Image (cartoon, rainbow, N blue to C red; front, top):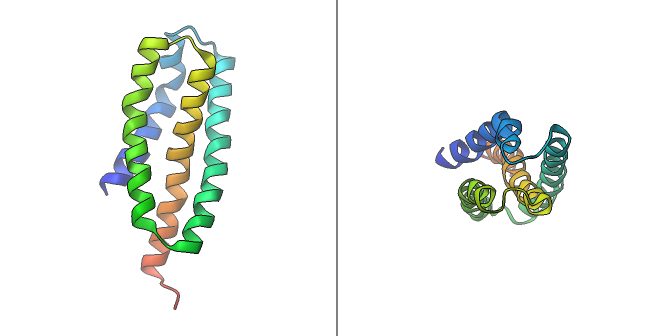
Length: 122
C-alpha cells in the first residue's frame, strides 16, 4: 500500500502542478509539453519491458522494491535538480523520462500483480 501511495500520489501531484512548477524556471508551455511527451513515451516503453520481465520471472517483490526506491529518489531529486540547475532542458528532459519510466510503468505492474493474486493461473 505504501508503494502504491508513493508512486501513484507522486505522479498525480507532478502531473497537476507540472506546468506551474516549471514555469517558475523559465520553461514555456511547449517545452513542458515535450517533457510530458517524454514521460509518456518512456513510461510506455519501460512498462513493456518490465511487463515482459515479470511474465518471464514473476519477481514482483524485487521489481516493486526497485521501482519504489527509484520513485523516492526521483521525488527528492527532481526538485533539487530544478533548484540547482533549473534551466537545463536536456537534464530536465532526462529526469522527466526517468519519472515517466518509474511512475507510469508501475501502475500496470500493480494491476498485473492484483490479477495474479486474485485469479492465479495453475
